[in-house]
Image (cartoon, rainbow, N blue to C red; front, top):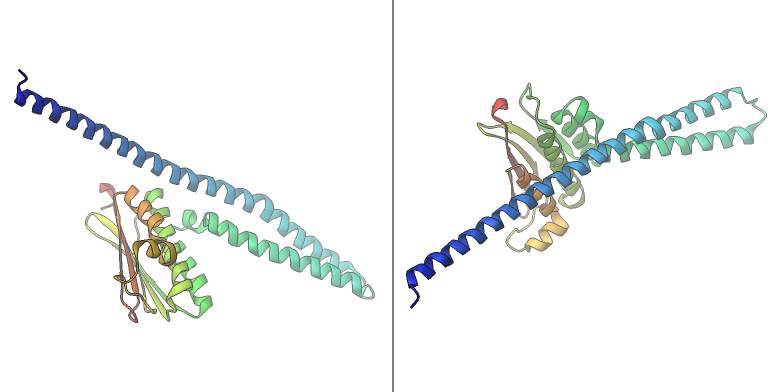
Length: 249
């Protein structure tokens, strides 16, 4: 006759083993996801550098050559001068588009001047061009942050700015970066049309408003979280907080 207590102990042991295995698999998936994201960022950085150093310099030299050619053409060759000017404009447009693509892949300012300068430049370049007032404030001096934290906060601010342009109809935006006791927080606040969070499904929110799924995954990979608050007619606030290493506190 079987001992019920022994069966219970055996079942509990098997369940405990199964749960432990699932936790290990989840940790492995979490780590793989993180490595995939940051490998992608490194690849984007390499592509951006290659485009800037090779294609960008080639276009710049082409523009200089066309300028020199135009300067040496006799005035009576009006048609040829117009062709050279048209070619120069095409090269200039291509260079401007290349710079836009390179910045989207990996903004050099993020590596050269840091997180705050990169966010300020991106926000001002895009929002002020649309007639939206932008204010960015952050601690000075900002400590040097690990690359994973900097790129995550920049990508989230980039997506927030893009969604404000697409959806908010805002007149002003305030971006605030703060260092707390154990974390760094980024708040992006707009005074746009806002929306009713209870009336919008999670799927619609992720697909059409802020792409929260990808943003939240980035934050959670670093042990952080994203909070969203919005009210119709009163704007939207997106906040992300990430834990910071002990040495930065």
